[in-house]
Each structure stands twice: as C-alpha cells, then as structure tokens.
Amino acid sequence: MLYEICQKNGKKVDIEQQRNGAKSTANVYVDGELVASASSDQKDIARLEAAKAALHKLERLLPATTMIRDCYVGIDGTFEVEAAKQKLYAICGIKKWPKPVYSIVKDEGTPQDKKFVTAVQIATPSATLQMSGDEKSRVKDAENSAASLMIRALQQHKYV
Image 1 (cartoon, rainbow, N blue to C red):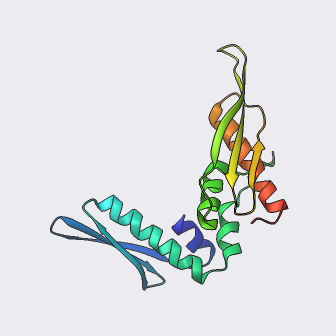
Image 2: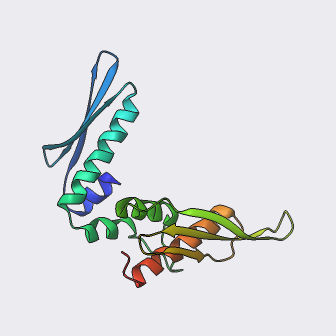
C-alpha cells in the first residue's frame, strides 16, 4: 500500500535494511528523506512496522481524500471494485474504524453447485453499516462483492 500511494503521488520509496547483532532495522525513505524506522528480531517484521509507521506519517502530509481514493482505484466492467475486500480493510484502517466483519447470509445448492451471499458490516463513529453482496459460487467472491458494494455506498454517502 505504501508503494502504491507514493507512486500515485509521484514519490519514490526506498526501504533499507540493516542488521545489528540479533536486531534487524528497516528505514523507510520517501524522496530521499528518512520518514520512518523500526526494528525487530525478524527482518520482515521490522520492514512491515517501518512501512506502517511511514503510512501514518504520510497520512498527515498527504490529503486524506488522496490516500483513500488510492485505496479503491480499479473498477472493472461489472462495477465491482477490484480487490474490494483488501481495499475496504485499508479504508477502515485509514479512517481508524474497526475491521470489517463478514458473515454468510445465504448458502444454497448442491455441493457441486453452491451459491453464497455474504454481508459485510463496519462500524463508523456515527453508525454501523451493513451491506449484502451478490450471489456467487465461492465465499471469497461473495465477500468481495459485499465489500465492493460497501465501498460504493461509502462513496455515495460521502463517508470517503
């Protein structure tokens, strides 16, 4: 997400890693300036924590609408947001809302011809929102459908 947001805002990201004994340190540079740093016993954890810290700092520097808009770019011909489940999770993180909760509301058909409908629920400061998706043959696709419709509803009602 850090790379994507920086790329869309014309910024260059570099993450440098160093090892000091048992600790691994990751430094995030945006356009050559140190933005964030983190350390851990594990290299990947240090890198992830540094990237998270950089995102939080960039959140204050870049307009919020730019950060959120970058999370849901990519709409295909069926009007479903590409990778909607991931993008809804990112939107909730940026807005500091709890994670989305998914539930199966319909599970019908024979094992060879299953159809699922899922609902997604998110809690905002002003209300708890719920949206059901379209009928799909896989739970993952049904969850993405619900997330896609939720993102559209959030846009339409000016939550994002």
